Length: 57
Image 1: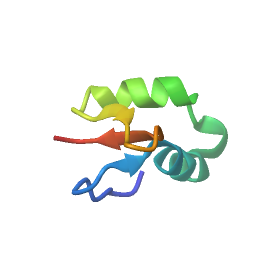
Image 2 (image 1 turned 135 degrees about the vertical axis):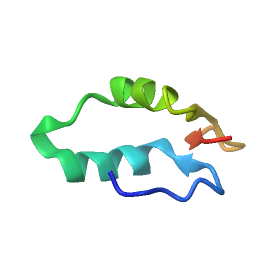
Image 3 (image 1 turned 180 degrees about the vertical axis):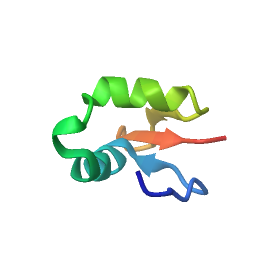
């Protein structure tokens, strides 16, 4: 996956969509994708609007 700028929270759906485009039929499901990212310190939460976002401290 291309490098992400983690200075601001990123919408989970946007990051996962980019991942799907890059990996096509080799892509894992969304839950596994988020779980795999947690191994690198990425956390999923919600923003003030209730949207799912990814953050990296």
